[in-house]
Image 1 (tube, rainbow, N blue to C red):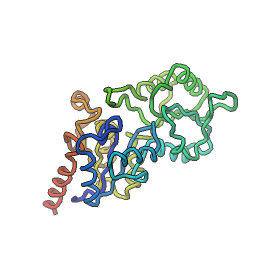
Image 2 (cartoon, rainbow, N blue to C red):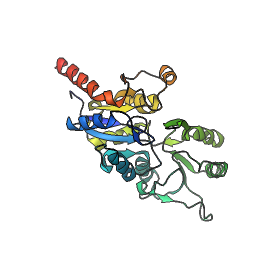
Image 3 (spheres, one colour):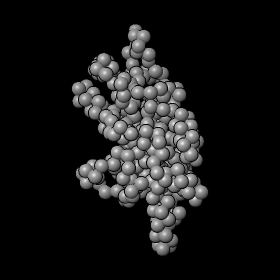
Image 4 (cartoon, rainbow, N blue to C red):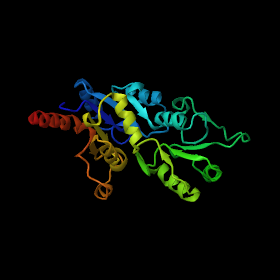
Length: 272
């Protein structure tokens, strides 16, 4: 499809909502696969492992495997291994993602005792983000621990509507402890570099499809990737109007992506 060789796709709000396929998304992904394009599902989801996500999506009919999925936890594990090798890490997250944090030395804070953690790692928000847990993380930061967060999303969409996410809690921790978190998932440039390396293409040969105009689309565009915003999931007209930039393309849903890619192919051929 023209100069496009790979498609980076957010999952939640783009392909699914509450893990249920949005209309036409299974068929659209199959069409993209059949066109010979490389595909990577790039997600800040921190409630499930890559293998679990792949099983759920494949069970719904999506042509994907665990090898197609790049998660914020997996990128976080690589970041910690590179920048904090051997560090003791306290994880605050909703969901079991230890399988994707291979090599990370996690501290069992429920048992107490032992040396304090070197790094506080913050994943996705949920019931675990109560006062005691946040206050404990604040204490570690006051004692000099570094702060690494998988993302700073403020909310996400479920079948019950928008739900509060990590960014709301992270901003408070940063301000109270007077530190700035290192972000490993979207919208960090390192995440998109990892995604491009995963599919083996350059930034100019990829498109990123997302429902979060800032973290998915504009962040990808800053990395040189063509951005495509979908009007599903967490998309809100107000956030679109108030965004810090303009998406390269806007479509109603992921089901419309194959047609957009065909249009891009036609434009590329006309320029040759």
